Amino acid sequence: MPLAKATGTDKKNQDQLIAGGPIPAHIAVIMDGNGRWAKRRGLPRIAGHNEGVNSVRDIVEACAQIGVRYLTLYTFSTENWKRPQDEVSMLMRLIVKALRDERDKLHQNEVRLKVIGEFDMLPGDVSGELRDAMEMMKNNGGLTLVLALNYSGRWDLIEAVKGICGDIQTGLLKKEQITEEIMARHLATVDIPDPDLLIRTSGELRISNFLLWQLAYSEIYISHQLWPAFRRTQLYEAIKDFQKRERRFGMVSEQLHSKKNAISKAYRKVQ
Image 1 (cartoon, one colour):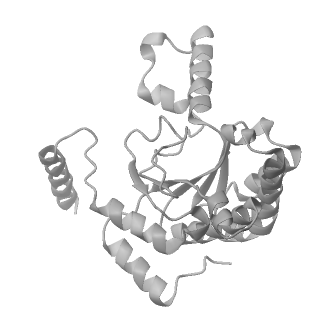
Image 2: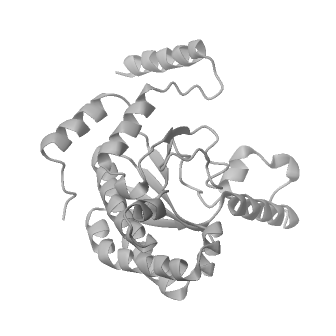
């Protein structure tokens, strides 16, 4: 089944977005505000998590339609184990249910699934469903959906350092050879480009131990919408804001424009 195309007003909005500037190749999202969304409606917290799944479904579909190549969702952090046990148990059951409900559609739409985090620490039914879904979708060539589960940026860095130390001990690497590229190869996100855009919902101004190395040059967009209310309309607003940014990567504007002009001239010569 091919990916359903946008229609009507949404198709017009997507066309304008694509024409308006570069689409981020990799978007990372801190999905915050499920509990507050439920509380404001007098509902149990799990109701917010349930509605948050609908937001995930809509954002995944929209990203695939507009050409985003990687979407990383901060699904469950290592710190989330500190929450009340009944909420954690319900979250784990919700992850299993969502995977069972969505994996066939994701597979049909060429989505590839990847998980980053302390995988083996997850409950057996969760890790089992994840392994089955990743195996099913491993050869797909569309959007790569990355779920950060039992993940923290500090854990990621510590594991990378352990891996580098191991390579030094076995003689595969000398300490003088350690570079940013070597570090990146030992992170959980190996083979995934750093995020171009980080979106955080609920208005909070922190990155909550998420992708600490990878976010070094990411553009950050804060939405005041709580995650269960965040849909593709808000996603498009975040991308429009991204398209207005000048990403200098340490350079000044003049250097950046000179580099772009040089690339443009080289391209015209090839043509």
